[in-house]
Length: 325
Image (cartoon, rainbow, N blue to C red; front, side, top):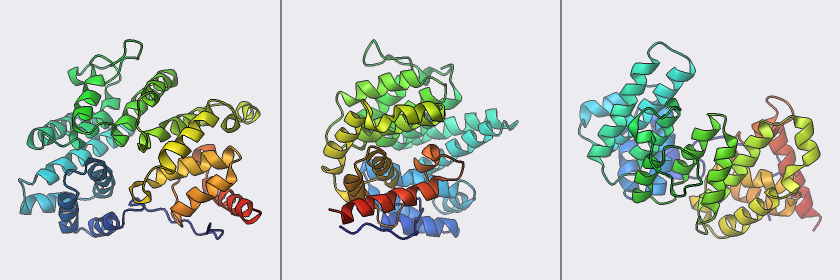
């Protein structure tokens, strides 16, 4: 098993998706043709399309490159979907910065999402974008942010949006992450835990949603007093051990590597390493190669900015554990 032990960590938004990497490079240079071609090739492979559109929107958000596309091909469905994602990111940034135009930008993003949903009725991406935007309506004033949960014991949330998404792309990775984020950003991690526990009861083998509990454990650790978290050593106790084993058995061992997200792999590598399962962590690091993500390492590091060093330490310890066997 070849586990990297050098200090090279590559942080790239495209992760393991080589085709996406080229499109990101072109977008950064103001070229949009490869993005149009990539989204067209993604077709109805909804998980791939959703993941790619997220990265492409994050790349395009600080430029006017999509306006150049619009001048050449204004009726493009893929353009409408990507513009909706970009509008959502801009509205969220304006709200975080408490900018005076935040309200109007929220309205613009909402209109862009509804337009994309109309022109691409089978596409789940506009609904993912609406779930991302829903955090700007914590009081659920807008009608689409209501709906009845599938279980009466589940908390209130934007269930109608999730239902629309489920009809188009069941078990959408990003959609369910957005749903969890809705409660976390309202300071209701207990509601998020109820949602995740319910979801684990019917998530199929191979689904990246099996990693969702690991994200919640990191969130809990990040928001707990460090002394208490260290004494509890949560990654070697229930329910963490159960959640780690489920992710390892039913996701990592059951899923093709090319479909994996780097941030999902990073959360699993961290959980295995922190849970003293270093040989298994080494296999995840091997799958990552030189790639890495800032999370969860930054959230669990003992000092601000210490995530990179923690990642390197974990990777070296995993490599030593393999060398001893």
